[in-house]
Image 1 (cartoon, rainbow, N blue to C red):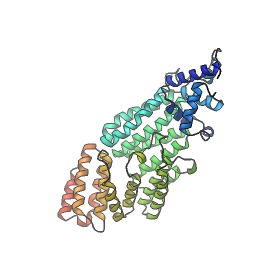
Image 2: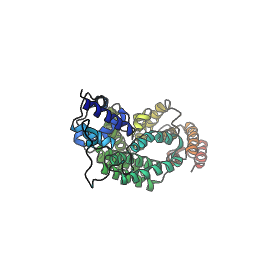
Image 3: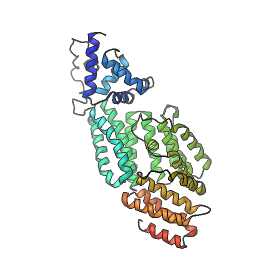
Image 4: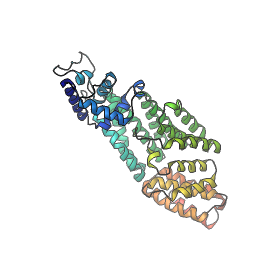
Length: 400
């Protein structure tokens, strides 16, 4: 090991720490920031971490590909990082556009927004949309401003976070039944995804457009967006494919095509165990217990397969944890709808479930849950004039 290699290794370690990155963070940044042709050749994250440690120890000199990634992730130039010991770094040419650090958009900000994202997802399950929208709205707008000011590669990291935050904000407005604002932020997410250029982000943003179409009940639009998200499917990560396939199933559910529902969900089921944590966004399939069963029960209900949906909901909700308050309320309302419209309805159980879901609706302010509850009387039309039917109408009236 030469003294020059040791000096460069120490310089790399200092640059990583100055950027606020752990070794694991840097490995993920490399995957995010690499050009497509380079990304396809990179090893797994664990092997990338070993490579980083070898570079910092001076036992393995970075080649041109890794020199580019070090520079992109730390906001330094390759000359600043890799000049030999004893030689002054090469000064940037006159007139060069300043780096992100020089214009005040530090690389650490990408990590800051990345770290905040899981907390927002968790808060959404507990608080519902109204208390969270102001925070996520402000952060999403801040990301948009930072994108305008940042140089590459910081801009690329900010664009990825911009997609994630705009998609989350679109979801929060959708949960609040503000479909116009939801559509706007879904569109912003897709625009930033195209600017970034990563097929994973573009497909994720298209899957979110399909999610927005779910609340309009437009089965054809859902299918179109989901199929667009699955374009060049072999290039996509398991996570993105699962999200798109699930929405494809819901679109077919609205169109009443049970066989197509089963085909789409069968493809998603084969992938769900392969979903990893490489991307910090779109993690519902990892954090929701019995995710695939829930999607199947929901899609069956939309396809009019109420008996099958009721059977699945009975199995699922015995395992559903209490801490997913808003989501559990939505699932209970869907269970009640299936039981209300089944060949052998269970009015007493429907009323009991509806009463519990109404409490969750009042606590979270979820208009998505309110809409699920408002649809219950239609599913219960066959016994609407019974005592249970009148009790159900009174319960639903308290939140509609």
